[in-house]
Image 1 (cartoon, one colour):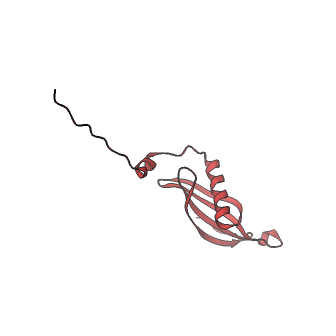
Image 2: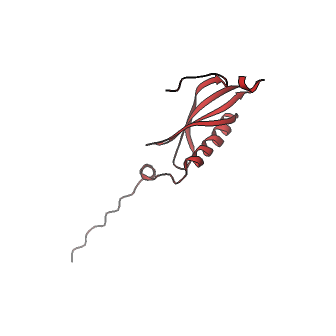
Image 3: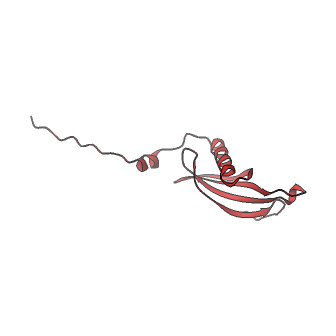
Length: 108
């Protein structure tokens, strides 16, 4: 009987991550983003204003209070866009906007 060579393919860690989906809920992902943005920026999170599942992870916008003012409606806020992996870890973030709490904006 002729022996057939055994072929083993190693699947890289990056390849595994691409096909794995998160088991975290949307609320858990929002909480993870809020906590990590607070740690990274040192600012108090105010709200999560957007969250979406993308091919490369989760995109979350977290608004933080960058400067408290009196009255509170004059606070200075920053909107931070964060990309989270399927485990809820921030892999990159950036401030996309800075505004006063009372400022009205047009949503696109």
